[in-house]
Image 1 (cartoon, rainbow, N blue to C red):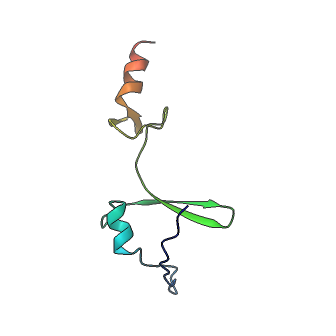
Image 2 (cartoon, rainbow, N blue to C red):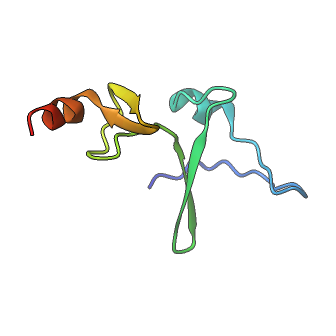
Length: 80
């Protein structure tokens, strides 16, 4: 993990500002969702990308019965 040297204060509602430099670098735009993970004493933020429930792939996703499934897994299921 690489330090940016940037610090931000957390306000009374638990919010902080994600610096524009980081948002640009990671292509995070207004209204994008972030996933929040914890790893022992760390908080990890990751841009949310809905993924296939079977293989985890994020490209070519379609909704099937309310579940996200990639086109490759749909093709594989057709051949069962």
